[in-house]
Image (tube, rainbow, N blue to C red; front, side):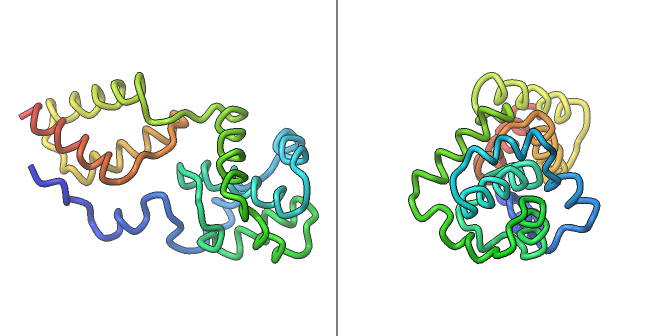
Length: 177
């Protein structure tokens, strides 16, 4: 079975912003409670505090960490900065100048918020779910892709690359038929 079954919309939106999140999405994924602010407050400098806060929101909303903070819509940056009392969001340009900073922050967020990598036993559990769905119904692979993405985010699993997920779905569907 071919692995290029994703729609243009699925390809463009997987792990990326496709526009400004609405107010409800901002409140749900980018709101920082006191525990978040305490965790963020351990970072030095406004650029690091804003950067780590945005990464927390991104992993909640997109299921992954972003390497280029310029891909975050300005509304999200302003919403997050206001919560931290940061008036000048241009400080974000300083965030992650050291590659290690972004990696260290991602590791801290994974540990603190209990996000996990896409590895065993989660790959097994997702494969089993997809196999069951493929066995009992003839759902389109694109629908299985959306199901898998939602399941991964619900279980706080960092999204793998889109090709990894499409390949898994193709293999599972082939075995189920």
